[in-house]
Image (tube, rainbow, N blue to C red; front, top):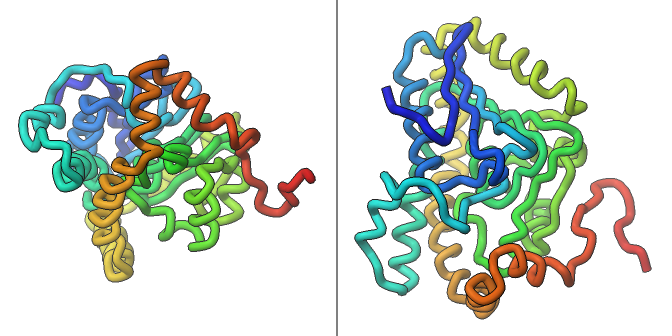
Length: 290
C-alpha cells in the first residue's frame, strides 16, 4: 500500500476516509498531495471492502487551493518538470493537463465520492470538491476562485454542471466568493448544514451508500457521469486547461508573478484583491451599497 505523508487514509464500515493533512497551509495541494490523493482514490476503487469515499480536510479549511508557494517532496507530478521546460502556451497547457489527471481520477473511478467541506474551499480546492459526486458543506464554508482576477482561469471547471451559467459567470468574472448556505441555494453543493452537524451529515450519507453493493453503486455513478460526458464535461476540462495556460500569458498574470517575486505571495494576493473590497456575494439580497 502507498505510504501517505500529506493525507490520512482510513477504511471502516464499508467506506474509505481521505483527510487532507496539511492544516498549517489550509491543505493547499502540493504536487505530492495531488499524487497521494490520486493514489488513495485508486486504492479505494480497488478495494472490495470499500463502497464509497469521504474526503475532508484537517484544520481550519477544506482546501485553500494549489500550493503555489512550494512545499512537499518533488515526487510524481513534479518529475514531469524535466519535460516541456519551455515557456510557450502549449508547454504550460501540457503541464496543466498532467496535474488535472490527478483530480479527474475522482470523476473516472467507479465508486462514489463525497466531499465534506468546511472553512475555505478556494481556487484548486473547488477543483477537488466539484470533481466529487456530492458536496456537503457547513453554512460558513467559503467557495470561490479569486485567482480568476488575474492568474488565468479554472484549470478544471465543473461549476457549469453544478450551478447555472449565470451564477458560474457571476463568480468567475469577478473572482468573488460565496458562503456555503448560499452555495446550496444555487445548486453548487448538495446541502449546507450548521458546522457542528457537518461530520454527522456526511457520515450519514456515506453509511447509506455503504449498504449498497459496490457494483450497483458503480452502475449508477457511471451512467450519470456518462450523461455529464454527453454534455461535454470531460471535453471541457481539456479546454479549461488550455485556456488557463493562455490566461497565464495575460498582463495581469505577469504582474502577479512579478509581485510574488518582489513582495512575496501574501502581499501579491493583497494587491490583487484590495480593489474589490468585500467579496462575498449574496444570492437573494441586494449587494450594492451606493
